[in-house]
Image 1 (cartoon, rainbow, N blue to C red):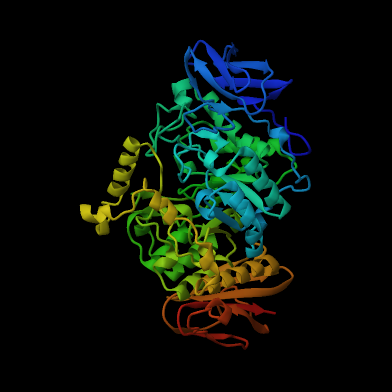
Image 2: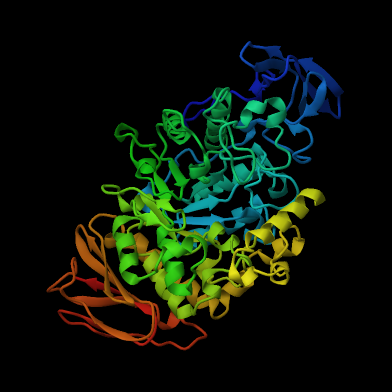
Length: 627
């Protein structure tokens, strides 16, 4: 049971300390006998029977079991197999599990109670490629850097253990065990504890829509973990609404509670909730948000969904029939920006024109598709987000999907001019929505983020072939020779190419972009106009220029004007929401000398009067204050 004001929860699956030993509990309804095999250097191998409780579960409290003991379950004498709720797989996902005592870690974060969504700036990172070490300890060493940058919440891509030595994490099969290639459970706890000491929240990406294709022993314990009603493109769809779905639902709820309590994480980002196929009266995500909040009444948890359907119900409260999540990834902003800046038109980008009026409409509403017909889906898409605070929409210029799911893993700034990238950055960090950064974008990293795996050869070959077939429908990869140029996910070089190069951050032109991010995040943190999502407006001043007005409750308003193409002159006055009769001052422009280090600066000319006039020489952005 968790203690010290951190909420109340007692494990129900796996192995946990109890009365001088460990209690073991597993669901294995497809079997009549379950034994635990315990292995230590001192005592060798012993076997203990678990008692059936009549509901498919088997359990036993066993004395004289210490933390670090290897164990596995025999299922009707077959095995031993790893524990589906193993806390640690030191020798890989196919080998024995190891017992872990969470209470052995000395936490120092008693005064930390979480981060309000209104203060969130998410920074998504992959543990293996964020630092040269590629470990939890490597991330811990960079936490002061993230504080200095100005982000407030670290969002970790999945760390649940997976086969091989490298993976994005979405092939996880040991959902309770931190990946051994990143470090130990204690290393992960040290990372979270240090983050809290520095004022950073930590949320974890969790995958509850499928299991990875190699090492998912849950199906050995029971075929009822797999749905007989639904299909998934990634692997067996989890059974959360069919016959026998009660224990699988409980498994996923238990997993979320485990991460929140045993690792004191500040929330979860739920991967692809549109692929959690659940026709139950109450969706699994609604159950999960309720369970987490009930177990942590004194903590500010952040529960974020990734969902491409634009469903307002996801973030509406339960008393309004909603799922109760805090926020949802709102991809329409990204898709408009990508079409506007880089011209992408394949796949789902065909649904977006990338015009400045459409981008303004998206920012005002939170997302663009609110029931209109989607040509890509050949069906209506979206619902009305009316009444939902804009801070509940998480927006980005880059994330792991929107980079890594491109054939070469190229980032937005690899294909557009840095002047335009700086202008878009100003928009991202001044909108009323909650911004998310992907590691390295703050210095316009030269490295891609490519798709990488380390599966056994036969499965790896299928992954490589499937990856290349996936892009065959795009004109650029219509012939086999072009497809062969797509990086092989199985090659170690693909993984290494995705690792950030920290030494470039302090060199032009990266240093200038980095300075801009720091300045904008400091402004977002300190200026009253950027602290609330209420009463913000966005408007297209012309075909290439966007204005965002951010009033402050008790202070000067900010007006952001961003030019996305060529030169042009705009006058601020008469537009809806535009402050009038004010004294104006310039806070910054994206062409200020510190932000264009090593490149030619072409600052806009600004005439400040009752109706300021901004003459743009090229794509750029200005932030003005109306006192």
